[in-house]
Image (cartoon, rainbow, N blue to C red; front, side, top):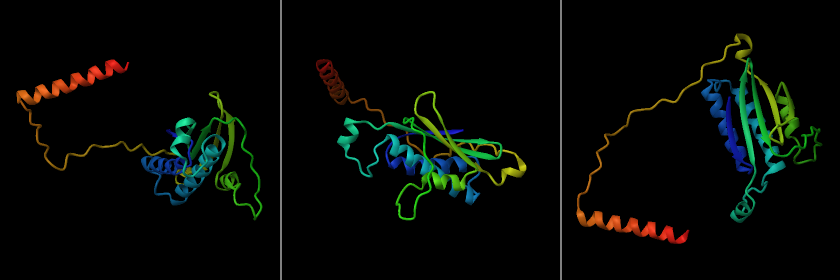
Length: 194
């Protein structure tokens, strides 16, 4: 399972897509092109709907808007179960999502229609923490026959490319006294402001 918490802003959509792609990579499922495209689409649509339901849906919100009213959260979770990948998105709005067929002249409203088209199934459930979780199940083509999950890829440290020199220690008494004096002034200023 992989989970990411994001502020409910339109910029969360791109971050959620990158998070989903990284999860596929870490589970060694990134080579399945169609699955990656479907995960991108489902993640984008579900997070966009969550942001529009509970967040700030302006493309470029002003800082004042964010300061006066901090955005709520959107939580994106990906789970691998058997031969399926579940994309789950939580938001604070308890209103159930509505699937409708858009007309040709509508600019929006196709999100859940597209999710239903590319996923095995989708639905929602109310969350115990409040709000709702909208989920979609995607088939993993390579795992449908083998039923084996790949082991997760763990991060590895790489050695430093250059040699690090030790830090020089100064024993210049006048420099050390100036630093000490400056630190005391900082402490005095903090004590007065409390």
